[in-house]
Image 1 (cartoon, rainbow, N blue to C red):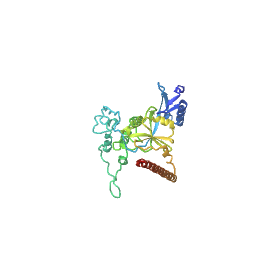
Image 2 (cartoon, rainbow, N blue to C red; image 1 turned 135 degrees about the horizontal axis):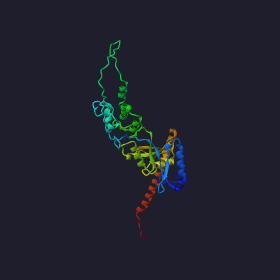
Image 3 (cartoon, rainbow, N blue to C red; image 1 turned 90 degrees about the horizontal axis):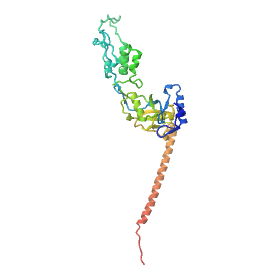
Image 4 (cartoon, rainbow, N blue to C red; image 1 turned 180 degrees about the vertical axis):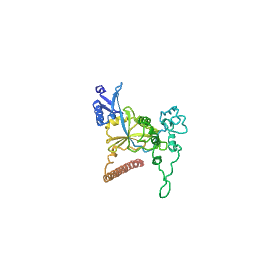
Length: 345
């Protein structure tokens, strides 16, 4: 955009203003810090009303303690593919080959519950004449035939998601482009796709993620955008965004705050400040408390001792003041309540 067309004063969030030179300096510093990641650069535009709008990716770290729930299906449910008519009864997509299941397409699973049922159902195998038994020379017992692939799959049933099982069993006959197209219909959190047995889980603390937003979006809108990206079923009102500084200060962003402006003003480095998605009831840490968090334990004990001494002195001062006021009021009341005796000559 034309830098000369910018207004002399730019609104940077709720009640804050920046001069044109300050804004351009912050924007250039931000993009220079991320010079090796051009896709993360911020871009700005100016509307008809003269308001400057900044757009780009915001880095948010997971800090939730309560479990989150993933949606069982996407908002736009994929329709099942129409079966292709093939005269070959052995074709995997032929309607005549109902007796043998053959290859199944991803779109045939309208409900993801069917994926787990498929994973736990043994595959139909063609009946063939068993080979002659091979006997050991010492005990004349048949040699046990082990299937390492089936053993590995049986051991991984409980630790692999259903989407991974489908990819393992059915993905061999598909091209890389087809698998990529099917995988893009839903994001994952650290590779965790929906599994109705493990759909309620807690992301690893501090794991970063990115969401594309604009500077006009408020805190609630950014949270809703992040939850919608990962198809999270929880209510956005259950969470809040917190700015955690290097000093240990933890400040909760209000609903009127604009997180992208907070990121621009603090700089792009996560070492200075990180934005966390946390539970709504997380406690804040003020600047006064944060300055003591990085001190050694003996120093903290001395500080606590000094605070207790100051507290005791303040308590004694209040008690002394109360006693003085009590004596003064008692004296004034005693003077007014004393009966006045008139004498006559």
